[in-house]
Image (cartoon, rainbow, N blue to C red; front, top):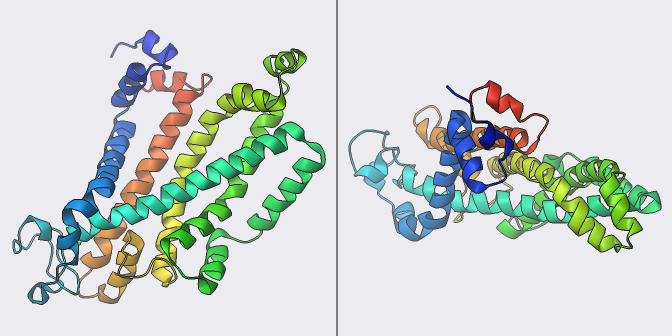
Length: 302
């Protein structure tokens, strides 16, 4: 297979990036899976909300691929005779909203604090780092358990708790990047020309740390999904009548001996999305790093 140096060395355009993604089969498959899940999250509740709530006690714990009930029951039915496929599609919205919202909040707040801490230094950096250390002293799961045990475990509270627990990750990572970038010549030149601090941070430094922040955010979405699933499994996450993949796994654990598919299919959905996010994050990291981009060429991916 002939390499295409132009596409490799000029990945800034959308077409070249998409071409690079298409040639990396694992990353392309991951992107397709994520697009399908996002499509289900956007359209699923509108199209299949009634089917996900419809009960048919005659089809309780119906086995997958049994041929009864139509295509919606291809994955089987739960203990109330509801379509597992419809419920997984509908549950994808809450799962994605929680994961992406929590990471977006953590990225905005932690990123801003990381920029300030790295650029200002001194006591400002020390205070922010001690704040991050105090949050990180509690494991994410333990912190969420403590807070949600005292508060109503609704979607908003789950998002806030998970966002707070991930802020230190972005703060410390972006601070480390800024400490190195602020010593470069183009930043020194901007300051010498009288550029205000806000302009230096937003126009010169922030675009340089954005690839790292995006790659980290992709990984954090997978981590937050797993934490949310764990909270729902413990019974302190999202509560019925709302539904998430983690809650479906929790509901199916009592039937593992007689109806394993109740927990298997939503667990498989969680696994596929987290693996896809990790693979796509790795591809993005290589594509956005000029030093490591040659690895895509050596693999024949681009």
